Length: 420
Ligand code: ADP
Ligand code: ASP
Ligand code: MG
Image 1 (cartoon, rainbow, N blue to C red):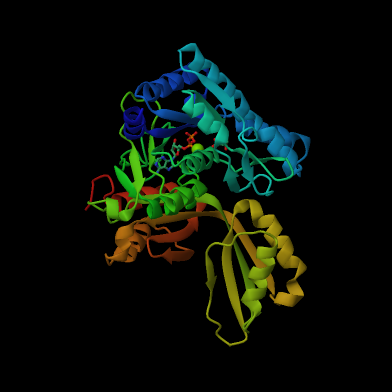
Image 2: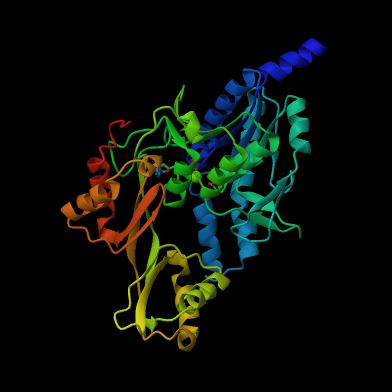
């Protein structure tokens, strides 16, 4: 008895496997996923599967909501868009059973996965593990619906687009799983979106910090919140292809675990940016606080900010960016408080894109910004706004230059070849 418990603890790993929309796009692909799960199960591991809706389904459901009412109720939106995942959990559980793997499906509220009440972008509070553990202890593979949970009032919630990644990492953290494998339609995390740059290179490893920046700055391969959770709970995270037999993928881990660190790991772009300039606001203490208080109260995230130096010491211009979906909200809040802020004019532009260069090597290498600006200027690209952190430089440029800028930077930093 003692020996078998010891053996079980020693040999059996707990693995969370997450499959995204393209991996479960039709019944045949769902059957393919089932064989991948079986392979892991047959190794003697405990396997929990998290799935997304079939590709395109969530978009279709969002469109239905808009067709009913452009200003739809967010709680009902969550009720509608969460249904996509309910279909795939049932189908995958069936596919597993049909090849001899005991399995059952779980919606978010059956587990339950408890979230706050922020409809359409809820955050996970807790995950009950009792039912999942009971399945695992009995050799049953739980198939969990990603993207969804339930709030304390019993309302269905969703975690924001791409949220199944976050469900998977959260389940892995709650179960203290040995691994969380994110299966998708690319074979790992690349130096930039491989659909845009043909010679983008797959990274063997990338740090949590870099991945966090990459995800939040536009690389949609992982939802930002999933990386935050993985970093916080030290989840062993991997991104790999669901279409390959023996995928290698990319490991996302601590900086200390990477021996050969790259100077620059990636380039991202995000079109979800709008720029607002408040012209001639009073140059006195409290004005910026007032502007950004008002925007925060309206739940609007402000990203890049620049304030030009006042020439006459009386007035100055403040420029900042907000997500495109928040542009109208921001403009109406600012218009309402025009007197209080005291600007003369307000200019907005949603024809812009944020391009970012990311790498932990920026902490120790000099000349990165210079090389970046030179590469952009060589292509005649005008930089409108700049923001930096310890490991990233972002620039705002005109929308039509997005692809040119990403390709130019990829070439300038020779990211197609490993640099250490
Ligand atoms: P899933 O449906 O499996 O969740 P997503 O479409 O959300 O997959 O994410 C995978 C996509 O992310 C890829 O098809 C790729 O085009 C895109 N992507 C953007 N940036 C990167 C990057 N740096 N590395 C890999 N993929 C990226
Ligand atoms: N189905 C949801 C979406 O399309 C969640 C996900 O795929 O991660 O956003
Ligand atoms: Mg995704």
